[in-house]
Length: 180
Image (cartoon, rainbow, N blue to C red; front, side, top):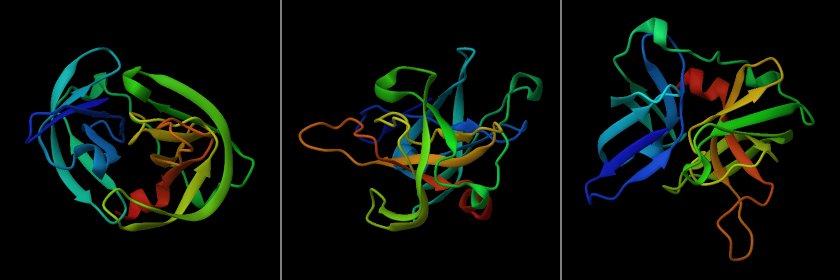
């Protein structure tokens, strides 16, 4: 998960995943936007300083880097999101409400949706899922039955007075991540 300290000294939290042994990490742009300091906590408990390598606000994707021994990192493979089909089983991994390393399960509910990013940009062709995604899951992987990342959990639809999941979450497709 990521802890960041925006300029106003508030803390925010999100999720992400390592994409190669050189320490590159994918997350959402809105997770790191405005941060003056980024701390990456690995699953083994180590905390490392993270550096933003690139950000794309139009797709809500960011690339971070940490300096760590390659043998201690466990990258996930980016799959081909164009092969996802409605009804496919998926799992979402993240830190909802700060509960580290949480896995939730669901299915691909719809494809090629358009959602509005926190900055107002429209993100096209996102994957809709009913796997529970909540605040803190942003930037985490949406993984298919083959164990490949097909999306980056980015948005949720909430209902009523709650900020929690109502069964509608959205992920930026892995093919968009590859392009960015």
